[in-house]
Length: 578
Image 1 (tube, rainbow, N blue to C red):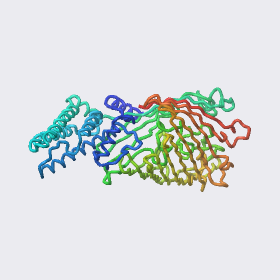
Image 2 (image 1 turned 180 degrees about the horizontal axis):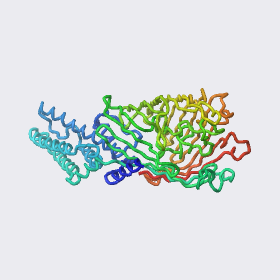
Image 3 (image 1 turned 90 degrees about the vertical axis):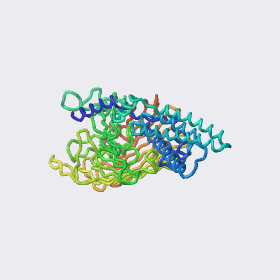
Image 4 (image 1 turned 45 degrees about the vertical axis):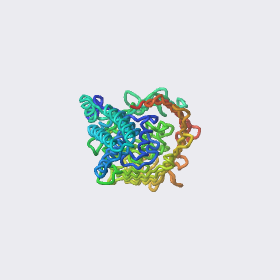
């Protein structure tokens, strides 16, 4: 309750002072302007090369950071020119290595991102001083023009043009006291963002034997088996995710992020609570993340649910049983008791974890071609009621990824080493046996390719030692598991995408290994999915999706039983991003 109250106060503060960090649309003129300036070496810290942004869309604050670097670079050029001028008489020019067209682009960029520049600490007073310095050079150019009669006409014309340019710049940079105080106040504000996913879901098979008309279960005043799922109603409306994300600067070096999830189907849960520290006593490309965060294993697990093609993650890569609605995924309330035919994801409850991570990004943060991350984690994930370290062991995760073919091809590899506490066997006389450390040692590989015709292909595989029964109820020595998926998304129009996905999960990958008498083939889960995503605008998306199980709901059920059927789930969703 205290956490909710505190977060409510923070939201109230954000609503008064905050400003949402929105993306700059890809068609915005600022991209072309910065690309042009970058190719001429006018972005400090980056070589003069094309394709500065790659395929990324940046936020207004990221764009403002680039503009700030342009201003710094222009300042350096002016300083260098001034040093040369002290050593010898200047030639009759006033541009000092920056053309009129380039100055015009700088003026437009600063005017467009003026608020964000103040928010990130750009010194507009210094910018005004730079303009004054340019003005002084104009006056010097006027004096020089008189010395060279042959060049006088050209120098005067250039000087007059530049003076007009500087007057425009002065006008663009002028801030009243009231405006400046408002911007300074806004610079200290928190930033609020998030998204809401409202859904209506229903199974394509509404047999009463699987989906009773009235919910069942429990001994209280209301049924405990709600829908849509087997044992409850076949359809229903729900808020799958309602994210509230608050973040902002702590200092010049550190930022914080706090995110809550408030779904209609579960308890309020803390998703993110971490600090990112820059400017470490290491090269500039390193960052340190500490707290509870999404750790970097593959693509599917850490990626935001707001940008994924499918309503849920792939079966083996998911953190919840929501992805397994077409399959049995219930577990026993008695520790060590295996539920026959039940399968839960490999990362159950672990889309986030507590620990620390250091990340290298090269050649720069804004367009990282290569990223290498190393994290040390508790390995227990997160929970609505909170979690603590359950064993004396720290898990390690590592990932390396890079972009090739002009950012059309991304490849990555991941590794995970850790343990988890599981019951050592079945209950004895109704009493659960002691816990043991079960090993998890996974390797993973992923690839993403954007074709010349716009189709995006993505594939990922993971596998390794997983010493657990498929329902994570009991230690299973030496067991191996693996999972993989393949997805494709193609734009049918500017606002409409079509996507398909094949997904396969083997909680037991080795031959001769059984769980409650079932083999790897009987416990394998497979789905085929597809649907449409329609973008009403930059913040609103509609999704119509169908997922079909290619294996039985419960492999332990007798052939011909309703529980041995293959089920399909239809999802309609409206997502609002803010």
